[in-house]
Each structure stands twice: as structure tokens, then as C-alpha cells.
Length: 457
Image (cartoon, rainbow, N blue to C red; front, side):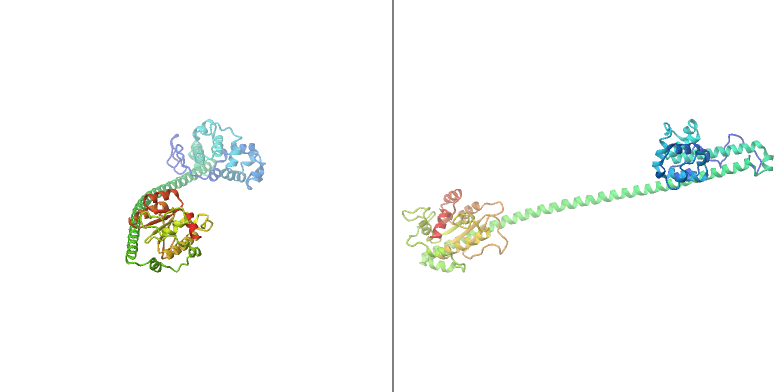
């Protein structure tokens, strides 16, 4: 009955201001707040389960320790119940310890089924220990609604006169209290719904941000792949250009060398035809490089070989004799090609010195030979040319390095082939295969040991 109007309401009908018992409030509620506001009649099984758990006092929160030994009846008082609500709502370990003392085989059931099969107090205990705060709030709202309905029914049964005569009667107070609890649970449900809506909006915002980031990342990845592809294409194009330029430069160098050799051969033939001696040639090509001491003690009285390809040695001499070296060096217009490291690494050379020292020693030795006999000397070494200023320098001796993937032997054979057919050529090497290849090109070949023996004689 409505106390203000005195009109009775039909039983079984539900007014608009009563909670909807068929809808669960959304998740996101605070467990401690739900337990603090839980009606006291739903606490009975929970406090008994807490006492049976016998949790070690040292593991309890400080606020709950004074009530650890209290009986279940005393724990239903306001202060211990609030302390226990705070501990259970915030401590999963405490909930698990208490849950071990409870029969929760059907704890996964809906709160309505639990309330029907196990009773409202047991259902509240299982929902609290499994932290199902939304369903616990729904159960509490249902209990509050039932209490309000029962209070209203009691007030209606007492009659309009009893309500009008005693507004502060027990039924009226119980009805007001039930409505207050109902309104409190409605506010909690509304707060939970507002929080869920905010979280869903934040989730949608983050999802949109992630989608935008993925699109931006895909665009950046595509730009990076395009840039890498273009860079690789430019690199490959530059490498092809460099390779072409190196090939052209090598061809130009070979052409210059061939023209230089041809001019020197013609100049030697011209000097021989005009009667100029080799001393003039020595004068023209002499360098400030000091000649080896051995070059000042050359053997005397050996006749010069006759020019040609190959040259004709004096009778009784062969290319393995020391005298053959001097006979060949006296040929006008002779071009001497030295297998550089083959000679320097000979036991009579400088095998223990560094490569740079070996090259400098050989250039000095060859410079003395060039100054003495007026011959053109080319020393060929394996490997790329050292940086400018690091290698030996001499105006009378040409130093040649093989390319990165080229052997000095191949370079020597190429130089021999590049000489004019009438230019006498002497190759100094102990490499048998190289000697045979040069002999096919009609060059004279003397071993490095023979040449060094002659130089030291």
C-alpha cells in the first residue's frame, strides 16, 4: 500500500521504481564496495567459511587481524564485517584460501540458479569467493527488492488505518529501508554501466588508433621498400659504370704502353742507324737512383748478342750462363721484363724483407742495369698498385701491378705480345710455365738465379 494515497496495489504487480530482477548489472564493479553494502543476512555462510579456513593471522590484512578469532555471530557486526569485506574484495589469495573450505561444485552456475538450489546466503558466498561481483550485486538487488515487496505486503495487510495512525511503525520503517537499499543498488548498477560505457569508448578509440598506426606503418614500409629498391638499382648501375670505366682505363693504359714501347723501339733503331752509341742512351735515361755496387763489377769481354726475336747469342753460350745475361743486355733497343716477386724472393734476392722493401730493392737494381746498358726495364708485381707515394719511383724503371683478378704471369705475357715484332725482349723469371709461354712469343728468357748471379759477379 502507498502510505501517502492509501490506495492498495495489486499483488504480483511491479512498480516502475522497483529494481528489475531479471537483468544483471554490468561488470566492472568494485568488490569491496559490493561486499560492504551486502545485506547482513547474506553474510552468514561467508563468515562461517572464513572461520573454517583458519587463515594464518600473519597473512591477514592489519585491519582484519583483531577479528581473526571472533565467532561467526560476532563477525556479523558492522566493524568486523567491513574489515572482512575489504580483505576479501582486494585479496585473491584470501578468497582462494576460504574457497578451499566451501563446496563449490556448481559455482559456475548463474546467480539465479544458485539462489534457488543453494540458498541466497550460500549463493552470495560462492559469488564473492569467485569475484563475480556483477552477479553478487544482482543477487543483493534481488534480495533488497524482495524485502521491499515483503515490507509493502506487510503494510498493506495491516490496513490503511494502521499505516495512517502509525507512520513510524515497524512496517513503514522496513519499507523505507528496503526502498533505500533498492535505490542504492540501482545507483551502483548505474555507476557500473557508466564505467563500462567509458571503457568501451576507450577501447574503440584505441582500436581506431591501432588501425591508423597500422595503415601508417604499411605506408612507411612501402616507402622503405621502394627506396631500397631504387638504391640497389642505382648501386648496380654505378657498379656497371665503374666496371666499364676500369675496362676502358685498362685498355687505354695498354695502348699507351704499346705506343710508348713502339716509340722507344723506333728511337733506338734511329740512334743505331745514325751511329749514336749506347752511352748516349744511358745519358738520356740515367736517374739519380744510385746503382747497385754489383753493377760496377760487370764482367768484361763478352760480345753482344745479335738483335732479333729471339736474339742470337754468341757461340758457346746458352740462356743458363751468366755471360748470356751481359750479352743480351748489350743488344740495342732491348726491353727487359722482370717477374718482380719471383726475383726478389729468390735466395739471392731479398726474401726476408717486407714486400715494399723488396720492390724498392728491385727498382734500385733495375735502375742500375738501365743506367749501365741503356735498356728499358719493366718490373711486374702481383696485386693492385699501392696508394700514391707508397710504391717505388724511378724514371728509368716502369713498375706495373696486375689487376685484382689478374696474375703477374698473364700481365707479363700480355706485355710481351704488345711489343713490336722487331723489338728484342728479355724476360727474367724462374717460373718454368711463364718462361715457356714467353718463349712461344719469341722472347729471350733467363732464370732469376742466373740474373742475380750475374748482378753480384
